[in-house]
Amino acid sequence: MLRLRHLVIFACLMASVACRQDMHNQPRYKPLAATDFFGDGRSARPAIEGTVARGHLRIDKARYTGKKEDGTDVDEFPFPITQPDLLRGQQRFNIFCSPCHSRVGDGNGIVVQRGFPRAASYHTAKLIKAPVGHFFDVMTNGFGAMPSYESRVDPDDRWRITAYIRVLQLSENASLEDVRPDQRAKLEKTP
Image 1 (cartoon, rainbow, N blue to C red):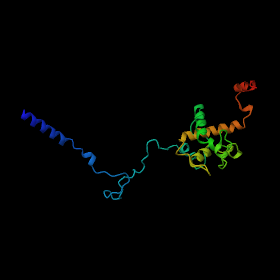
Image 2: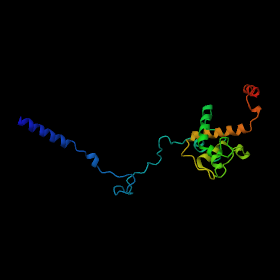
Image 3: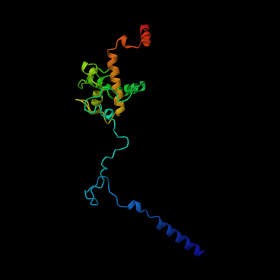
Image 4: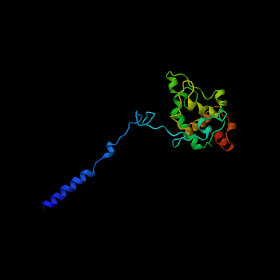
């Protein structure tokens, strides 16, 4: 019995020695703290040149800047715009743009009605003639009192908003001749 007791005590001692937690005591640095270990005095190592974070490889310049290689605004959308794209563009426009530009794009949104400077109307001749890359560039970099929305709105959603702005411009000056013949009959029947 005494021998069993010594054996149990010995096993407990051996188990307690094996449970050391050296990882919690290992040398470490707080992010961006100074250190003498590296020659440049920084604990955080700089990114390797040419490294691109996942999801941030921007090969298609027009899609992510709205500019051609020569620096001018693009005239066409970088991907085909579908009905779901327009609906998404309308949703994003109503969230991000309509407070200043209004839901119809006349520049008289709710914040303008409360005293902020008047926003641009999309229905001016200058903006109707503007290439689609202009709208993308303004959303990306800001213009005048308008801030940049690059960090808040994904690039593809900025293109969708641009497409919806074109819809607003077309709807403001649309005539019956602009409607497809099969849809025109429906409009003519409505009072």
